[in-house]
Amino acid sequence: YMLAIGLAVNTLTDMVLLSAPASTMAKEALLQGMDRTFNQFEAFLRDGISQLEGLGSLAGEVDANFADAEKFSLEADQEPRWHKALFRTKLFGLLIDKLRETHADLLTVQRSFQGEGGEELFSLISERPSFPAVRRELLAKMQRTQKLLRDVLGHESIGRIDPDILNGVADLGGSQPEALERLIAEIRQEVLASSHKKHGKFEPGTMALDQVCRLCTFLEMLSRVAKDVHSTLAVTIEQL
Image 1 (cartoon, rainbow, N blue to C red):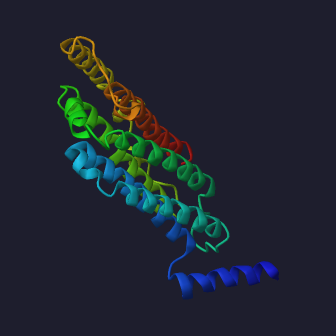
Image 2 (image 1 turned 180 degrees about the vertical axis):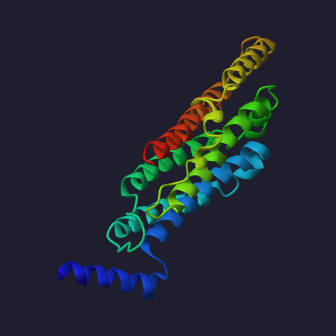
């Protein structure tokens, strides 16, 4: 009796107040947060530090999206599904955790270019021969992740999911862009050459302005981002 009343209240709330089931709102909030942080990072890799304006505001918006996704997913787990399959509670929780981690790492990469000397730092990296390949490989995997999550979360029927949604995933390679090691070697060579030109003298005002520290942060966090995206793909496939 009480369960019936609870389900009725949830259904009435969906119809009158939310205008959409909690599962739909959870999915939309998750995908919106993912798109915002992924698209921001793509714009940064393509256009440089001019895209960092408003990064703080965007970070807050993405955090709010993921908080909404988490809140609505708890309600979705209790909503009547009728002709639909059960809500993918476990997968959804894993995706929230993975995307939050990815979002934090994406922000760290971009923040390493904020402040004095950021434009010169981006030029040093983006002008290396291997940078376009790293950008292309990483963005291809991020875009494929966006599509796969949409396809998987959009499948709510009790029927079997189309295996064709995995087409092309295997072609994306491992957890690291193949060109990343070449990029690291090229940056190391450039830094050493620059140091020799200055006769080994380097006197940054603070660690935050230390070019080598910022380069190390960029490379380490870029590697983590690649692993984050690969892990999100892997978790999604495992839960199919």
